[in-house]
Amino acid sequence: MADNTVILDGSGVKRALTRIAHEVLEKNKGVEGLVLVGIRTGGVFLAQELAERLVEIEGVEVPCGAVDITMYRDDIKGHAEHLPVGKTELPFSIEGKKVVLVDDVLFTGRTIRAAMDALMDQGRASCIQLAVLVDRGHRDLPIRADFVGRNVPTSRSENIVVAFDAGNKPTEVILQK
Image (cartoon, rainbow, N blue to C red; front, side, top):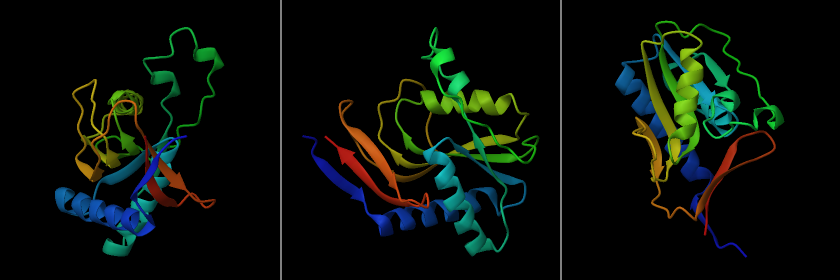
């Protein structure tokens, strides 16, 4: 039986996302030219939450999209035809934009690398910044987040789960040992 520890409860998740929103605004000097892109699936829900926080703070809507990385993963050789492919939805051009790529958990960096490859196929952003709710360490690639809700040192055998309710709102972050 797994030993579960709540790392962030609902209010902790809200505080972390609000702090990330403020950090994004500070680093980018506002929302001009800014777009949010969530990595399917959890990152999309968090990008939407982040967009809501930015509206609350700045009173301006920030475009929000989604990227599917299935065909960009480096672990699918010979298995691609059996994987469900999601949809990349970018109802805006990323050309020349400041893209904040959003994911729930940063671990090895391979998902982020795949997402950046997928984004680069969509156009040339002026920059790509990374926002994650949880950074758990153990990178395989030289990738780091610009905005982190919580750093949680883990072992490779442990797992971090971001739970969402039926409305796709984040409810808690759990460490599974």
